[in-house]
Image (cartoon, rainbow, N blue to C red; front, top):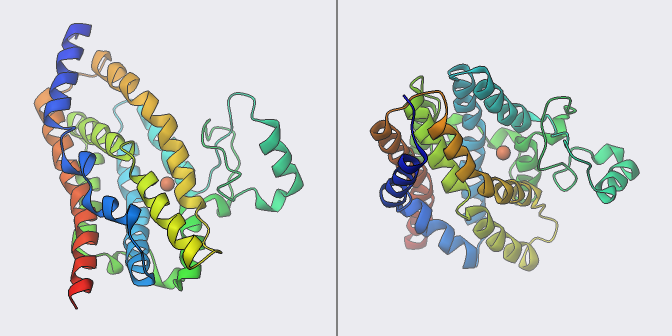
Length: 281
Ligand SMILES: [Fe+2]
């Protein structure tokens, strides 16, 4: 089946109306609050704990996505994300700036720190560093908050809504059905590009300045940089997918995308409920 550019336009319109209107994309109440809140230690500890569970469980979903990939190219794309997530640094395909080269040469020990780690390129030929695992950046962030490895990341620490999100990722994002996984990917990418990293950074910078100057924000600033670049590509990715060789069911794509966003929403809504609950008590 060959799709046309005109059909793509139609489909994009449909996505705007049926998917991009999801509250988690246009009005994430927790992140809106977080950006301007006077955060306290308890807010950040619960947030960090749930985020750490999601970070680890996401690896499982990504592995499913890799195994269930529809072709080799897609398998490699999934591997890029997985390998990078666990510590394989992107090797820039283009010339990297002299400044970051210099910084790294001065401090080879720091090569895994997020401020110095590339946000674009490929893991192919890249160097693996334990310290470049995103989870380790999150551990660095958690430490000044009084949270250590043993307090973080395990499924048993996940709230009901966090675990719902994680399980929906495995079920839909990592699905064997291409229409489902593609719809979920599209949804997740658009959610990630909608600016929640910036809202988190805004709130965290405020907290850092007021209460905890040693709090390292590299985990968040690195992801924000990646998303800024990625945002520009989401349209091209949809075009490639839509006009590409693998047929997918449009209804399933949209429906799965929406279900995935409901999962994402559950995560943030769970955080929001918990903080409101604490306010009451
Ligand atoms: Fe990550």
